[in-house]
Length: 157
Image 1: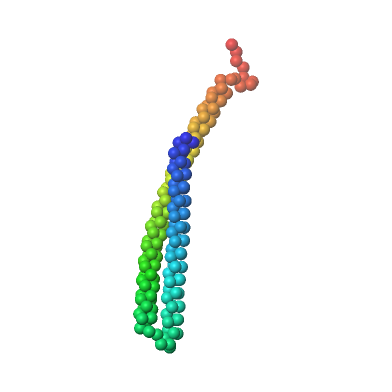
Image 2: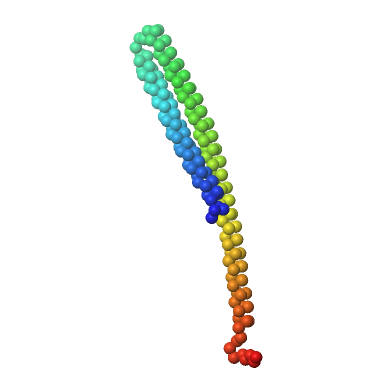
């Protein structure tokens, strides 16, 4: 089994690495979900603010309040655009994290295939060795049987 030790160690390390990458994917997915929630909150707030502004339009409003409202809505729209950019960046991070995880899965799969191949080779060597021992034992047994006289045979000396 010492011949398999290095492959088993590589599999152990590859498994740990794959698990770490899976955790990264999960963390980035949570970040993406949070970013979407923030965007939803911003968009909801903007819609609520617009609805309130429209309902208050029946009253007389000064030009300064209107200007402040437009400035506020512009800033809110900028925040929405920025959050959309954040989401885009997190989506790219998620794609990269998933690619890294897939590569780690391929590596682990390859190492497991190497282990399987080496185990099969060791088993074949062991079977050949056992067959050789069985053949040698049978040959020695046959030689002993030929060397000992059969019962009922007479040997005159």
